[in-house]
Amino acid sequence: MKLLIIDTETADDENTPCEISATLYQVSEYKGAVASVSTLIPVQANNVQAINGIAPELTTPSIPIYLNALVFLKEMATQADYAVAFNAEFDSDVVNKFFPNLISVPWLCAMRDFNWGYHIINSQFAIRNSQFSERS
Image (cartoon, rainbow, N blue to C red; front, side):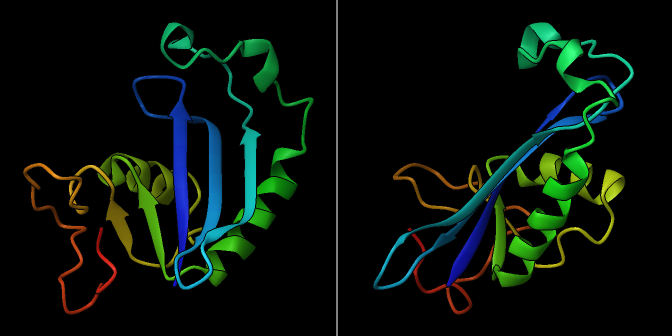
């Protein structure tokens, strides 16, 4: 099984993404990272620099490498069985709104869908035991 572990950073109240990162991680007899990508995305302003720590000068349209990174991320997603984010509700909304069709696999929420040894909060992203036998 392969998991695409995703994180986004946003720049404003509309959750405009200014960064996206992903690692394709294999979970089986042989475990490990298969591939990773992280890229800044051009935005007009980063109103939450104090939170995300990303200097607005790094997210200018004059650095177009992010387009290649998104193509690579989409290819990684085709190899994944699930997308995983700490807050999948937030990250899936950002990805689906700004990058439609980038991720087509089901999402899991690391905050809600995994047993980390404390109370689990059910969410719409939960995978039932019969579907996900390697549940942590």
